[in-house]
Amino acid sequence: MKRLYKSLLELLFPQRGCPLCGAKGPVGPCQRCGLFIYRSSAEPFCRICGRFFSEPAAGLCLECSSREWPFVFSRAALPYEGSLRSAVHRLKFGKRQAAVDFLGGLMADVFNRESAYRKAGMVVPVPLSPARLEERGFNQAELLAGVVAENCGVELVTALQKKADTPAQAQLDRDARRRNIKKSFRLIDNPVVRGKTVVVVDDVFTTGSTLSSAAETLLEGGVKQVFGLVLGSGRTFPK
Image 1 (cartoon, rainbow, N blue to C red):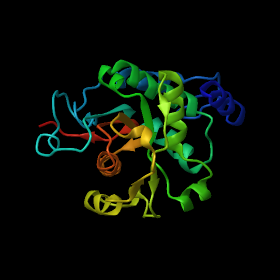
Image 2 (cartoon, rainbow, N blue to C red):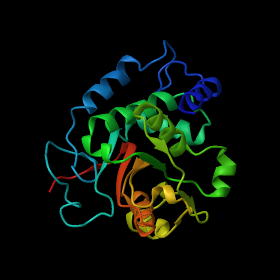
Image 3 (cartoon, rainbow, N blue to C red):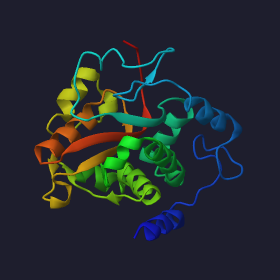
Image 4 (tube, rainbow, N blue to C red):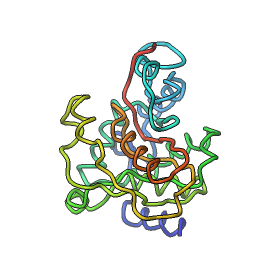
């Protein structure tokens, strides 16, 4: 099934040029985006929320030092800025999914580097509402999670449903995001996740509201532990 999933992605969304900025040329990151990926791999980040620091630092960010999250920790492949922001925008709104395999591969690299993820045997994508899924035609988080599952030898489980349409998170400030997404998911009656450790996959981590709401729903439904894995994360300030 995993090989079939990958073959279907390659058939439907053949990749051309740079998967981040979309520049024409050989398949693969251009020189500028390759440098962005290389530099990002050495950037410091908060060891809990996974957001990249805005200045040289280590340990916890200011927010994580004063609050608890329902997930153990989250990690991101790249900072959500520059060419990655453009790539995510094309993926979500431009119906150009050609870069899914490459972007998901970046996330799979993070999964394989982080030893704690080995506790989990499955990845759970953050769902879209039925109306938004019908409008868009796909769930970008599920596409990315499928690539992670295929590359890391874990199971893809669609264990969550979105209850109803809510305003897009990108349009809201921090407090409004938390109110908007709170209790917006339901757990599908899927016994395979109960008592298990899972990794929730999404495209972007900014305030952490979406991942928190998903994690709370899973924990209330009997999941043992929740980790987060995202393609891009915002920046934060050190403690």
